[in-house]
Image (cartoon, rainbow, N blue to C red; front, side):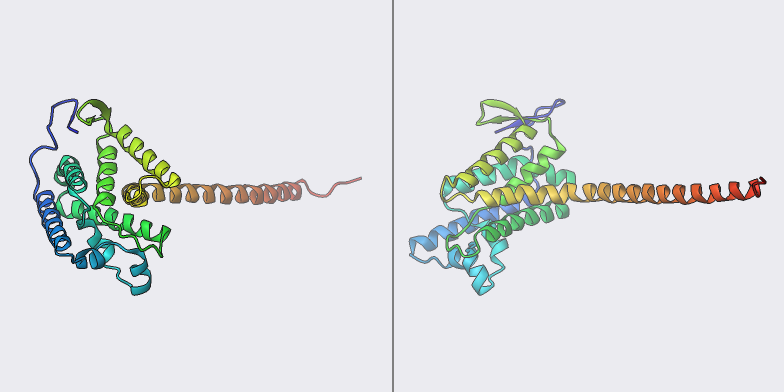
Length: 245
């Protein structure tokens, strides 16, 4: 996929930024170590650093919520995750700065892992891949640049906001149907959800507080009007004086 804005055409995310570059290098290095270990029939990396829900539940290996992001199953898995990171991450890092970009990346990635764990606490199946964070980045890009166009599979032009909605709907449907074993749909949806709450939560919370404040003020106003109206009626009655028959 490549994208362009209305003012200028950009190919595959533009020049690589520092954090995106290091994330890609680290993921690639860990992938090679994982494959080397598997060639030597050693699954130590997967067993201790992949997200295995039952080990988190029973052995409190909570570091797996962060380390699983750097493990990938095969070359296509890491290729598409790193390609998407490159395409959308560069603009986000340039817009936010390194610190906020990195914080958001891990919050959405860890959040996706936590969601997966909550739905299958006793599962022995390892969850690996940066997809939770990648989906979080895609959501952020869709919120910041909703009308930028991407070429889906290099063929179909599509606005980013529709791409986010379509991918979220596909993962939601797949999670309900239980299709595509080996794909952690809950982690994908978790990354989207956590990203949305992180970016839009404070705004909606502020609106809720404003609504509750205004509603409380209206209630107090009504109470005061009732009290004031009753008090004024009594004062008017006293001014009239006694009724003479």
